[in-house]
Length: 252
Length: 344
Image (cartoon, each protein chain N blue to C red):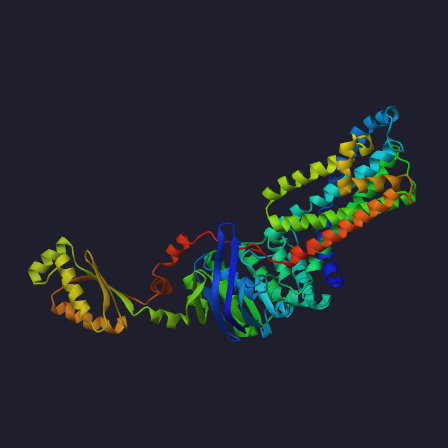
């Protein structure tokens, strides 16, 4: 299985290297957020009581990373639909290659892309004035890459089930928007009214955002890091299982 | 090479269950080139996808390349090659690279996969194209690339799904040659689906005809044609004004009356049947049409019927399909329900 994963990963990476410009495109949106929304936040953080600890960048950059992982992961399914249509998936499914590898090789490629984007993003944020202990950044990146891979596995599974961009795009939007709003990415949920805060706790991503923020503050033994870390691992395991099952099963 | 018994597949759709394949028996011997013929939607692709492990049958059993399909699909995959209808090369990937990666997914060592890829590029007239992305190849080249991918691991059994659909006539006959060579030079057993009668006729040792999820006939193209009892004979009597004048002079009959007489005369030929008159044209079927012609000519002459044309046509597979199912292959296509196809 490892060998097959490596082959599928290698094939996907070579495709990426032929078109590296997409990696850069993936971070234009978060960079825009940094430049055009971040400054707004710096003035608000100082003036608003009840903000969680940390300055505006320490609050916002980790959340942006989660958002990057979220969207970067969710959208990989489009590429898979194109591959499916070209017959690539089916051609690979008639080989004895492990079904898990067909998924995992692609997810690993996405992990590499997410990591590269995240590092770039943190470097740019440093220019904006982010201060972060390097261990914190490393932990934050690790959580974020794992999250990104969990979502890309999910995205592949959904893409294989719907098999059409027309159905896939609205589905993504329908899921992504409430998830983002209820995760405290834009503003911490600690500011929310009680009912909204409780609602956001149901959303696993709110815990991941909390963990990411705690990591960036260097708060490693906080409960937030533990809970968020476990949630991420849990999501990753579920996504891997579901994704593999989808690659294995055939349907009408 | 293939032994399938009662292989069936039912799809569940919103409007209820659709029986795409209703229990087919298939036997293919090693070294055979067998065609699976039927209109679109007849169940060809579904059957092929079951035999190639891509789709679980809802009933039935099969041994493919000596391995039980249900018990050990991975080993079946190792032993067979499959070329899907739409191909399977990534459009942006250099084709050489794609072919080698495909070989390595079959657990070939890199050096061996490279060597085999080079060999196949040579064998399938693709030499020099290995750096090109698949989307820049012509239709015929892409098809040959797909075949190369199906052959990379030297399978003893190759499945081809509609190999020549969408190809121009030249690429088509070129691909036929390659398919024939596979069997002749490399001993590969080939099982292909087609909805072209001429393709099945030109290429295959044996043809299985599938309609509505059921195999309705099996045999060599000639055997199948013999099921259509006899050759088609078409007699056109001289029905023009000139013919009538000529008839008055020479004492022969012409026109519609002549057609009726011709039909009566032809109907007396041993074994003649399905006699039909349409204006000045008489159609009938008779065993061994070529041998029956001299007698027919003599009789018509004796009856004083003047002819303007006479032809004998050996039955085509289209006639076979018509005889077996009561409708022409083209009509069957038009009427085929848009059932679940492709997809997985």
